[in-house]
Image 1 (tube, rainbow, N blue to C red):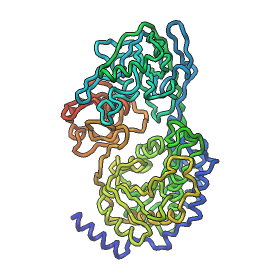
Image 2 (tube, helix red, strand yellow):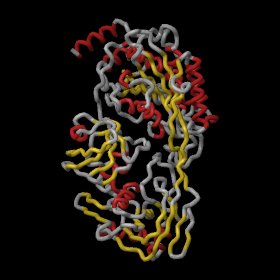
Image 3 (cartoon, rainbow, N blue to C red):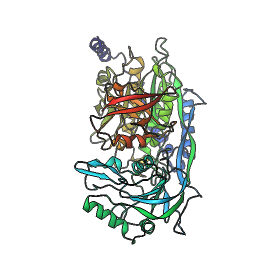
Image 4 (cartoon, helix red, strand yellow):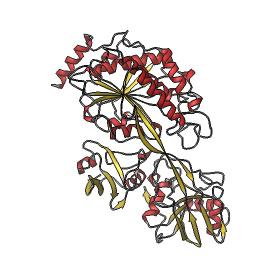
Length: 596
């Protein structure tokens, strides 16, 4: 039956029933350029979420929506949410040992994920702070040592630094080591970088890692000189210990001879950002209570710097983000103006959303789907535009992802792509590194439109004069046709899962097993656990009874407080294992048995 329906729809497309006329899709390149130049201007200073430039961008977008005649939703067009925008060292950080007092930043520095806490406790040196196995190499830096109520010192890195496929990789992150010693009752963790990792002997910058979750214990970066002093060894001790462990393929651990008193003070700055939301109602009495969402994120990286996402981490300069994603927002604004014309939108109602804080982990999009102004069941499709301003002149290609997320997507694209001045490259996967992922995780059909990455991506050189405005006009016309087709398409698109609903990226690096879930990787605060954003059909989690919205609080009895704890626990599991996972569902705790 679906096959017959698809064929009939394709026939309608060929007859031009749903096609927009050339006049209807006329998008003005001068207006696109104007929007991009303002949003990417130095005045807005890179539009980092929570900054004045972020607020100015949102106000501009809202004014453009209003001028186009769209109905502003929620709070005069704003949907507010809060986020942690920065992490800094407070004024109460202190470190004393052996009768000496040491200097913050110069000698020691808390990590951004350190808890704010303090402890006076004896010291244990515990190798790399790892326990596990990689191939034939078995390693346990904690064997025979009681870490309870002690400061643990460990080297950064792992026992197989030259092995890109080492099973120790998931265990070797700074957070994973903090989790390991926390599980063993340690008072806190002191991490020191050997010269193989950091040539100069300095502490780690307290750069914001885009997470609001702390490790549950104080975690402190110390210099090699301080580490040697605490251990009562020569200044070269740290490098010597590393070389000895790697050469002998055996851990070195021992109790220290001094008591350490450390207090950590980490200040997290919470700010407000917003999505900008407007609606153009449909005129079809049968379809107007259903919605198509058209989105683009408006935030960017601010002034760059460590932890910002800039590819030039040592450069402090305005990251204007002309393509990423002033281009998508400019197209969004022009689409509002187009569909605001009388008689154009004769199908479903259209929600236009400029998302905030995408660069910080899709925070705006995640907030939108969790607090949607309309029932998510009434949202029949979502189109996301992210970086649509760099259509190549020599080989023009527009990528459309998500074509496997609903029936007839390919038939729709077959028709809408005819006679375009570019090739349409398709990808069926519904998950990706942009706002549509939040909708896909809710079982909503998605299409992600982009002209692709380039050398200026996430640098200060993503400038307005490098935008191909004529090409962007063509891409925007293309999206307008997609919207018109979807707004009138009957029956509505039917969701189908296409590709993993678990986010790709470094969170899953080198994991040997997967539950088949989409974890909340945004860093959003969850009450004592990690929220499950989506569950893959027929995956281990689904077969155990796990459902979207569950909050994982323990794996094999070990606590899970956030996504970092979750990845640390998963990194220690193997294929074929049977594990018990404790979740909170509707306020009650449940135990699920999962076969990996």
